[in-house]
Image 1 (tube, rainbow, N blue to C red):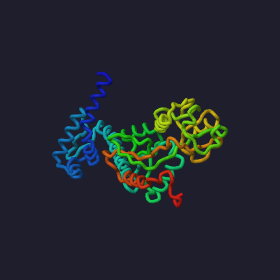
Image 2 (image 1 turned 60 degrees about the vertical axis):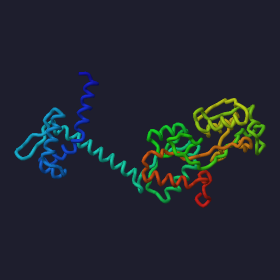
Image 3 (image 1 turned 120 degrees about the vertical axis):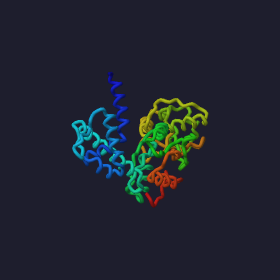
Image 4 (image 1 turned 180 degrees about the horizontal axis):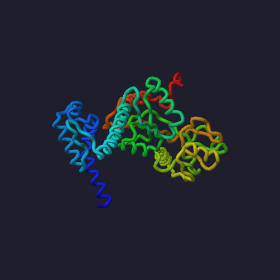
Length: 315
């Protein structure tokens, strides 16, 4: 018999006996079928037939009859050790998923763009936990496409994303507009200006996010609207890295404002076309929603217009 066929045979046996293991463990603890049946709330003949079926499926004797009771055979003792481990793991797993769904101490798997991480998301979580201190978060920073893929796979409950996806399986709500600036080195010819048209940088070399990132799709659309295809010298995954490249004089960029000023760069307001991206919340409406996810989703939606600009009283 090959390894694969042996593995398939064992899998079939496991599938057959798995529902019987709780009853087997009860019989092993009581060493008496009648008492075990009473504890399980099933008729004694039913439990006797179940044990006979379990032995037949396993192909080895698991119980030895001793007068009015039963005792485990050597094979039965071996199996019981694994059964108890499996039942304990199952109980722990159920405890975890029940706790994750609990309103007081549940968990939310929340994805967001890298650029939302330094300030916006920490402030959002801080404000939410004022009223819900026990709810835990699994945080994932990724590109928009990766987040949506992970959400569809069941790994994320909610995500902050841009641009807003247009897909029939997703619910999406716009929350805030974030202005994008033309970022130039401090000694750039446009650095003394406050406002520029994007077309004025058409001859410059740009540093951009890598293809596939939501911000890259947005900036490419803005370049097209301005009437030019940029000369791209460098592509990156982090806006902070792109700002560093601008500060080093290696190009200009179209980016959201930083949370803290970056020496050596100047942010210029773009007057034409209107340069911004809309940040929104996305989720899977067809998926069952736990209480913590519902509470956090409603809280985030209530921050519309204040996601990037929180109330002064809240910091």
